[in-house]
Length: 224
Image 1 (tube, one colour):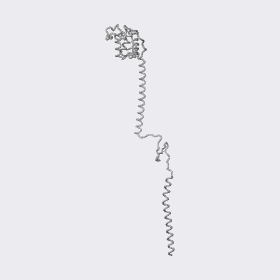
Image 2: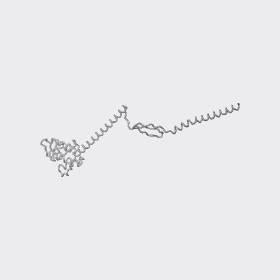
Image 3: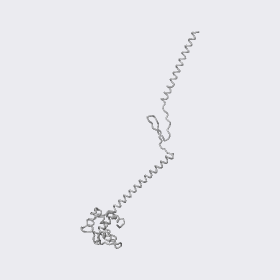
Image 4: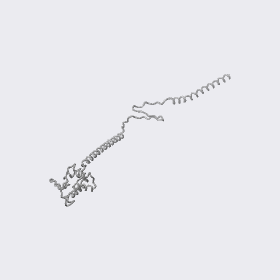
């Protein structure tokens, strides 16, 4: 009886040891199995919304981007309207500036064209034109100014000392109105071309700056 009890006890102990061994193995195997399943299973990527794409980075992060975006925030909408208005105003200002520049360029070209005159021939010595040419040179004006002066006084008086406009009373080479104004340049204003030319050049310089300035005015208005 004692022998039987000893045998039974040994078998019970052996069975308990086997059960314990299996239990420990199962306890260790379960986390390892779970870890294996976690590392081997690919990450789940949810479908992107319509109109989106994504970029992947080294960290595995995903950045979703919307192809088009329509703001609804009132402050954002107001800022967008202000930016659009500013852009439109800038475009209008640029167009206006370009138009003004074009008009000024055209006006300048037209003015330059109307104030120029054909080149005057070399005057004969001792003539009124020869006297005028020397006076023009003495004032520092070039040959273009002399050409304008020749064209101007050809139209006004034909360079005649005794020229008289019966309707207005203008007299002399420069057609001073009245002719007596030329007395400020000399008492012989009625007969001396140099006196008349001196007065005429002084008048032109004071009123138009140069003979070409006076010629341009005459071209535009018919008088100077």
